[in-house]
Each structure stands twice: as C-alpha cells, then as structure tokens.
Length: 245
Image (cartoon, rainbow, N blue to C red; front, side, top):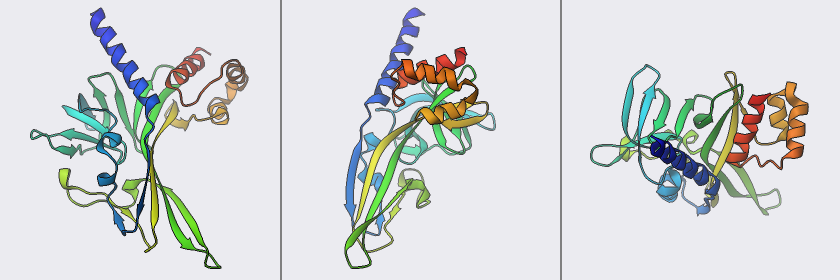
C-alpha cells in the first residue's frame, strides 16, 4: 500500500514538474488565407501528457467511460484513442476526467478544461493549460508605411472545423492577402475557486481581490515570501495558508 501511495505521489510530482518546464514558443509566417495549425504545431506540444494515459470520463448525465486519454491544449479538447489507435475527440457533456496517474481535469463552461490541483477548504487551486495564439498582419499605414496589426485569439473560436474524429480540421483565417505572423506558445494560468466562482490568481492585486477580508494577512504573507505566481508548489503553499486563516 505504501509503495502504491509513493508511486502516485511520484507521478503527481512529475506532472507538476512537467507544468513548470513547459516552454513551447514558435512563430510561423503564412500568406495562405486558411491555416491548419493542427498540422503546424507539433503534436507533442499540443498534448498535455507525453503519452496517452488510462483514465475515466464522468459525464454530466451520470454516465462514465474509460480509455486511453489525453488533453489537447491547442483546441481545448479531451481526446482518446479508439480500438485502431486513431485519435478521436471525446464527445458529450463532460463533467470531469480522472487519469490513472492521479491528475484530475474538470470542465468549466466559462473557461474550458482546467486541472484541479487542490480542492479542500475555502480556496481551491486550479490550473488552465492552453496554447496561446497571437497573430500579426502586415498592413499599410496612412502614409504607405508597413505597420503591424495584432490580435490574440483561440483557434477553435475562429472556425468550427470540418470533418469528424481523425478527419476533422480546425483553421485559422487570414482575411487579407498580406503576410501574417502567427506566434503559438504554451501558457499556464492558475485559478482559485471560491464558492462557485473562479478567479484568476496571477498577481497580488488579483489575489487580494479574491479575499478582501484577508487583505492584511495576504500582504504579510507576500512580504515574507518571494512568491512566484507561476510556481505550482508555491501556489499550493499559498492556498494552504489561505485555508488556514
């Protein structure tokens, strides 16, 4: 029993380390009007786990299903392998996913899939994992000089896609005929759930806004700790402190 617990803890530590080490950042230049980012972004950078992992899916209607699963951070989708080993989107109204390695993901309509890290007490810690897409298009200014027009968006909001399962495609649109630079990079974002509300916890102001009644205690904690709002272990310790108040 102790060996099993130690194994689970080791796996969870590996997942936490993986989160802290993600650094994917790549820029592509396109002139095409439709860009299939699924083909451009390496598959290993799209998926949260290095390999498909056994897990169980809990649906909102109470049904469950199990299989070899992974989370696609580019498209914010749960995916699985079918019997022939092909990748498929896991359809249905998903409530949560429990992976055999101990990771738990929940679906929140306002944000998509989030990893549940700590869920006991008044403050619960979650993390969003996604591929941020930033586009820059070369346009002509009022005097003919080339300037850049920038936008940040999520891939799935640009096109509903075509096809199903392994045949589906999602596209990024380039509305003009000018070259477009597309930067894609991994981004993690910690969220704190208080009651039924989720709040971003990326800096001191956001944190104190979540718990205004503990403003002074949080100021003291942040003064005594050189807190990194992107470090999983430090965020866990912060949540433990809040729950001790």
